[in-house]
Length: 399
Image (cartoon, rainbow, N blue to C red; front, side, top):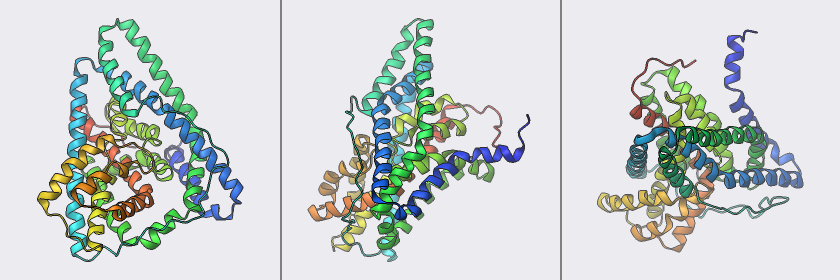
């Protein structure tokens, strides 16, 4: 049976529409749900997330091993290229944050920052359990890369058998995970709705929201425009493919939780599908566009609002170098981006305890927007990596 063009286009948007519907259902109808029911959905969402985070190191190892085992002698070159791209991108983003922050502050666009008060009555899960972290994501990434490169010494039949095993693991993992994600989104979005996190952001810090969206999101969209060579059709194609990952990231506040969907979107956006499994797991917790824009920008605003002098460019460059290095120690979990930065803010910007508490609270409030920006930035980085490592091979169909 031949599929009509209309049905073909509808199918492309099915997954983002399902995720968006789940998110809007929880945010707008959650207030009418009894608290025990919300606690149940929140517990289910947490359970899915804990299982995902527990499995994530094994998923990263499988993806990286399979990809690097196929690269042969060029694997080490790809690894160094990824590290260089991530460091340069984070450094540039941190500098742009300083320039845009100074511009908006001098224009008087930055509103007064006050203590970020959170709602006292927080939603708690109806049930909970604990899963230990056996290995870290960074260890899994490094181990997968090393084992993949060493697999070149194995016989081709053995190497292919091991590679197929890890490939099947990731395939069945995604098949099991995807049907569960609407329940995951509903649970985490009900938490946001009950704790009034989103309403707090837009009612008390609307000026910061506008500045952050204008600068960080504008920069990421400009990257997609450049990568698409300013062709509207290709630009829309890129954004449509990363949309499911953005929705998961907004609801979960975790780049790690969105990894399977970021990977699926990257495979559609890249010329060489195998590049997606190389770049996406490698940068999920270290290439953080949203963090690089938000943390320095809000730090400058806090200094100004409390009467402290702003750092000059020389001092800020020293801060940026250490700030970007610390990004390699960030965990892709809610709130993980700020905690390793607190000593750096204390050292370079002379933040006291009150200022550190304030920037931590604001970071947690903004985490849905920051995480979404991080995931979008990773989508752009994947396309850039693909273009650098792939020779032109003809036109691609974007319909």
